[in-house]
Image (spheres, rainbow, N blue to C red):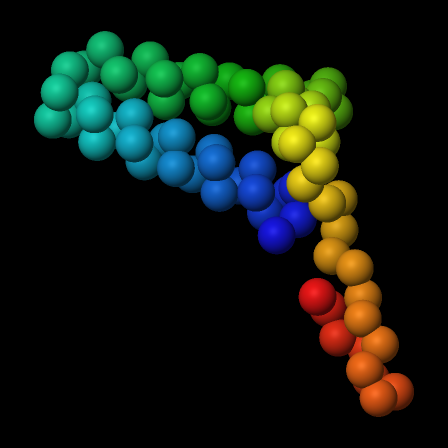
Length: 76
C-alpha cells in the first residue's frame, strides 16, 4: 500500500467513524469531520499534510516497487 492510498484510507475511516459517532453517541463528534475536511483543504492548498509526514516517518512507501518476473513487470 502506498502513502497516498494509506492517506485516503485513513481519511475515509476518520470521516466514517466521526459521522457514525456523531449520529449514535454525540453530535460533538461531527467537529472531527470538520477538522478532517479542513485539513484536506489546507493540504491541497499548501502541499503539506501532517498525516503524510507521520506516514513517511513510519516508512510507508511513496510508490509501489516494480518486480521483474520472466520479462514481465509486476507491481509488488
